[in-house]
Length: 215
Image (cartoon, rainbow, N blue to C red; front, side, top):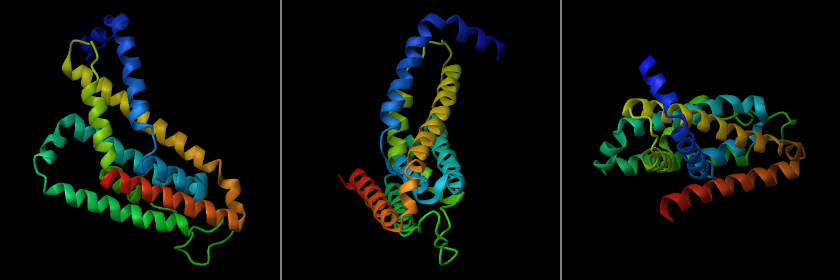
């Protein structure tokens, strides 16, 4: 490990431009609107910061799981077994439909829910399942991970550095999208504005996932 750390620092002048390129490409590919980022924004707007945290933690862990799968090369195995693809897509679409319904029917933030289910934010497990069933995550992470190269001399060290950087970016990207949604929460204290904005988020979420799946 010490030898790997020394190798990393000795490549400093050559490494920083490559790290910057990795960061920019990851932000461009992974930070753009998609099922997970838009769902985080919509959940944050509909349910507020505190109640959205478990869902966002699930999204983060699910997306990092995808990153580990890509790094391990399992994605190649999945691509060689095309019969698995429809099941993965169906799972993603089903949960997106359920999530869009929950967002569209969420009550105003300062208004008590009429029933327990109506006011309950999506769970950690729901976020995790969407994270690992998000088709864009596999494509985006595969493109960034395979399309970047770090001049560190050791393939294992290069993979570990990529894993660390991309994991931090996944958390940072979803946090920014969550805060963007929470910033809209003031609008959701008015019943009419709340309903219209939640429906708009639900429609955008549906359009995004179906466009990505069938567009």
